[in-house]
Image (cartoon, rainbow, N blue to C red; front, side, top):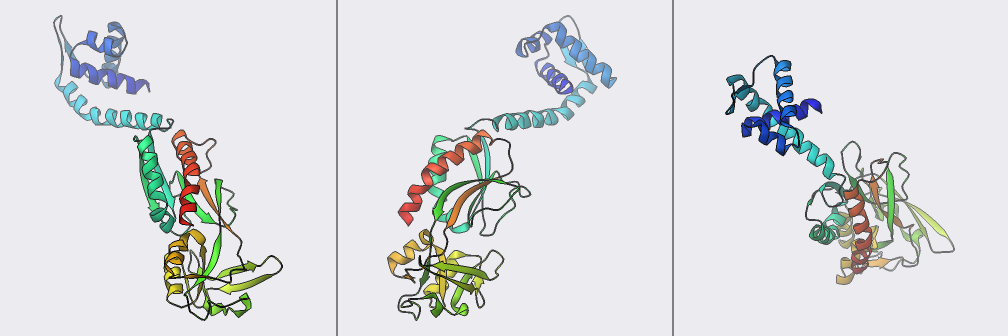
Amino acid sequence: MNDYKALRTFLLAAEKRNFAQVARELNMTPAAVTRAIAALEEDLGVQLFVRTTRQVSLTTDGAIFAAQVQPAVKAIDDARKDAMNTHKADHGRLRISAPTWFGQQVLPPILSAFRDSHPKISFEISLADGLVNIIEDDYDLAIRISAEPSDKFTIWRKISIVDRILVAAPGSRFSDMTHPNALNPDDCLAYSGQSKREHWTLSDGSGSASISAGRAFSANSGELLASMAADGVGVAMLPKFHVAEHLRTGRLVHVLNDWSPPPLWLTLYYPPYQALPPRIASFSKFFEQQVPAFMSAMG
């Protein structure tokens, strides 16, 4: 950073045209400022200032050099500021990936509340229903609703359990089923990030049943699956909070009530930090405190 300091000293001298004033602003001695400018001139092989007993002024070469290096020094100043802000809990930028429906319905009030108390933190939110590579895609954290994590290359924090239920259209041939054996695989609408089949395991506490879902229809959108189920196409297995409004309005009904799939986990995923940067740790703590109330209200 010695060259950077020399350039900052030079640019301030070019602005102030007074070495003594530069020395005061940079907490240097006038002699140190003179030596720094002289060393820079020697390194460049050009004279940057004309010095008299009354004033200091830029040479033509000095003016050209100042115009060329000023943007670069400003960029370094901005980068230094950004880097230092990443170690503050109330400054910086957060790039977050979240599931589409969750990001639309649950995340906005949490983000708004956090912004009220942390106005200097900015956000870049990306909504996608498939899993993202938070390292390659340069996210600070990802919100995921999935099975128990098995990723060995990231770190994660379990926030809550997410219960799932089976839903179908009221009055459909699925609404009176009492056992999963009544389900044809073609009737099972699968959720899949790659639009592939999904394996359902259901339990009533004393027995279990397995179904290969998605033979006839799969999608990577929970809302699309809910709509297809509401149209009587089949049965969907979705997070309870996701379909809560559909259940309240009677668009969907809970079927096979005595049979439950394993719950999912709501987790926060992070790149493999040795320690979470303060702004990320601050948001994570706030999210963990706030999200249960929103999830409960919706479920």
